[in-house]
Length: 183
Image: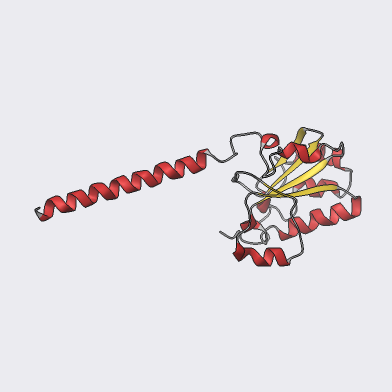
């Protein structure tokens, strides 16, 4: 076979492999839960995310990727302080099972409550459920030194803080992140 035909054949095979990789990546993105409402996200145990608040008390759910654990340490610490001070109903949900390289996360002593069945993007997120209803959905939390909801909780109870945070979320002044996000 002439050399120019072998080169063309290799190029076609490389193109087909690249195309297959792109299709596989699209499949992974399509299988994420981002297009679904957060209250319908499935946990590894089979229940929905809304099910963690079915005891009647309002529940705050932090959705974190294990890679964000240290970038979110201030937010996690503030929420754990709120949970201790107010006897609040706080759940920490991870987007995926932590890898073995995340041993420092395990050594921090902070435990998570659930793991999502399929990952979501755009984490960390703050969600507040009252019963099965999602009443607050905070995103892009790494922009803030303290989130609008945490700031509102300093002066009011959770239901009132949710209302205040919803009205402030669009106008809350963005502050630089306290730490850079790790990949």
